[in-house]
Amino acid sequence: MSRLSLLVVLSAAFVATTATPAVDLGGGCTITSFNQVDSVVKSCSNIVISGLTVPAGKTLELNLKDNAKLTFQGTTKFEHHVWKGPLVIISGNKITVTGASGSKLDGQGPAYWDGKGEKTTKPKFFKIKAKGGSVFKNLQLLNCPVQCVSIDSCSDLTLSNFNIDNSAGKKLGHNTDGFDISSSKNLIIDNAHVTNQDDCIAVNKGSNMIFRNIHCSGGHGLSISVGQSKTGSFEDNTIKNVTFIDSYVTDSDNGIHVKTHSDAGKGSLTDITYQNIEMSGIRKFGINIEQDYENGKPTGKPKNNIPITKFTAKGIRGHMTGSNSMAVKILCAQGGCSNWVWSGVSLSDAAKKSSCTASPVKAC
Image (cartoon, rainbow, N blue to C red; front, side, top):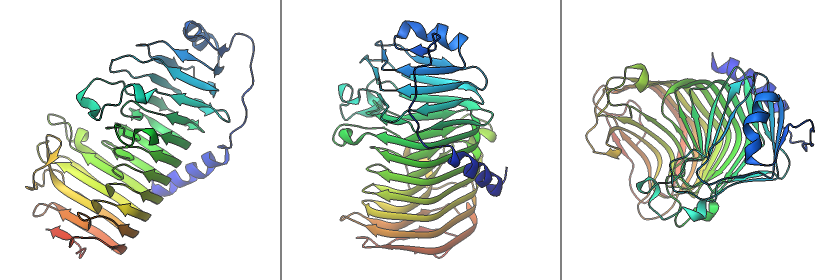
């Protein structure tokens, strides 16, 4: 699917994103107690979850019928338990999942936060496995223990009007990624607000994605990280045709972060666009592109096992803050980066001079 086709889908999906109050459907299709979940999901195609408390150590698993509709009402809470989760899994084909006005899902993050992130056991929050033109809209996630939304093995999926609020974890929250995307294609995320302590969006594998009107605060910015599968195939280490557009990053470590893993097999990162991105209060890097990650850390020794080609940075503007800030850092291996477009990049107030190694554009 081309970028133009995805934008047409986006326009159609956005028309239907206005929140409307849910009503009690009767007929046994409203879930207020956890012991109702299995029977309601099996028998109903129009489901309301209203004021539900999910018992400790249990996953709210919702494998919906084709074309089913699910609405969250009130507050859905998850009792504290030390385990890996996830707290919620929603799957299905051509499904619609909506948050009614004022609804929220509360992951009880303060009960878990210790400043150590994944180094101690905590449950991931909200996992989506949907396809076929499915839509998730008007959802508010509060206080994720660790990673907030995982989009895994999805296709033809639109998320709109999401609010991920981990602002209370400013001191002790860690690894609270907003959206983690893997093994997915034909994805749109539009009009999302993320306040967290790690990547706002992290793309790990997949193709044909648009992220539009994303508002990020407090974390690590708009990220791509490819090559985390050390023994995977070429496809496992490939990302293609991804666009971030008309978005904002504030009070964060990074604005844009793109990294390939030098300890992975061969792969490809191509057709990547960052356009019309505004930043403020960026503490480390406005734009950081590097081909040197091993075991989750930069080594300073780039490799070209995963070339970065057809990369566009256009209309990137804003300002840095702090004594360690740098507007641009590019660390490419020789021959590892090619066919880039770089225009209208203006990032002011950096404390350190930009650094460019084997860059195919004049970015420094």
